[in-house]
Length: 403
Image (cartoon, rainbow, N blue to C red; front, side, top):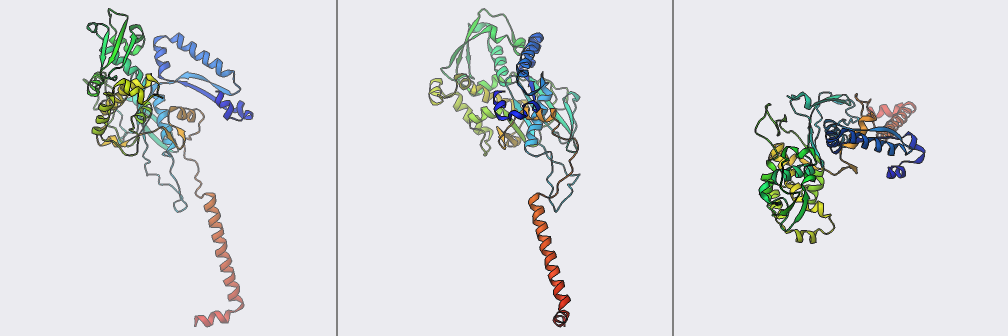
């Protein structure tokens, strides 16, 4: 908000709306302690009300909303909702179908996948959202996997792997060789996401010792995805309906930050074999050597990149069933035209009604094109007038040439 007070002119503060939407972290808190979640929102609302902006309230948005707003953001910034009209084609073709991007969002507590299936058939009504934007109807598939953001997924994996027989030592392949840290059992089980793995342990703390093996790490992660049943024609995991992925996807938030660190965001698409080879080398790199090479990166983040990279590849390939062919359609995005990619812009566009339901009246000519045509037509008219005057005053010259 301090930044907003500096950017927005003071004369416009009172007419500038401010919205606050809380996502998966607060959704988890509401599951665990609804009264505490309400108190947090109330405290935030009081704080924001102290500024001279037009505060419109704070609320916890649903996972569906989070997915939909991310989808809106990407396609709005890419210009996928509107069709450009040239002066040679003043009316857009109503039958032409603008191909939208799908949206892949990965946070700390949840992850969302949202896209328009080609056949518009979505077997699970709870995963369907309908939009009418710029005169077009969209039937959008979306699902939010609570507890499958990268931070909560790591906690799930640790809770799954820690056993009574480990004597308080967990040798974990998702951390680098030589890495060690101590974790409280109470902290591990404090999240609603780890309740299904909770058990009575004979120790209050346990030590994590990294072994740095990507393949073993990936196998441990895959155990978080239950693919043993599917009540639909096609599923992702945990019995959740997922149409076959289609078209291009923009992957943002933690997808982008992790893959950028691992150098997987370049224009040249890496094959699965190349990414696997890179991950195997990275995860097996000794912790002390890694700290020396990446001294400017916080140790908490640096220690988890092996897990996060393995988790992203497992989620996209095994959870969402991207193939070697469709993988090239995933574009890891941090910004589009200097605007951050995420759900927040879509949230604001929706609340401020900045995306119309109907197609606005087109402006077929740009100002420069309009000026050019006016000058051209004026010159043509002047030329015609000069020829007409010449013919009028010297008709014999004109007829002589004709003969």
